[in-house]
Figure (cartoon, rainbow, N blue to C red):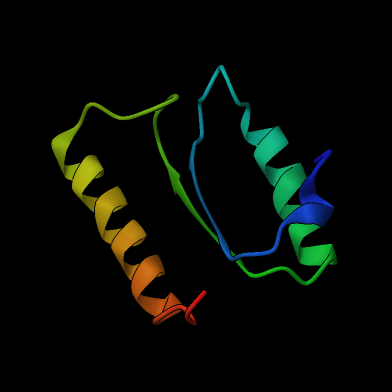
Length: 78
């Protein structure tokens, strides 16, 4: 949450409901602050810890990431 005001691009968060390294409550606090600031974001929650070793879940996460990027469109030239 320390740097959430500095977010300048859309954010995609993949969060494990049982993640011991980054508890879901911390994710919820961050998402809440993103919403308060009106910053674009998406979240994908999954029923595992810090990652999933289940192939089907990994494929679903990749699909969510691809969909997120596709919705961003083509970036303007630098």
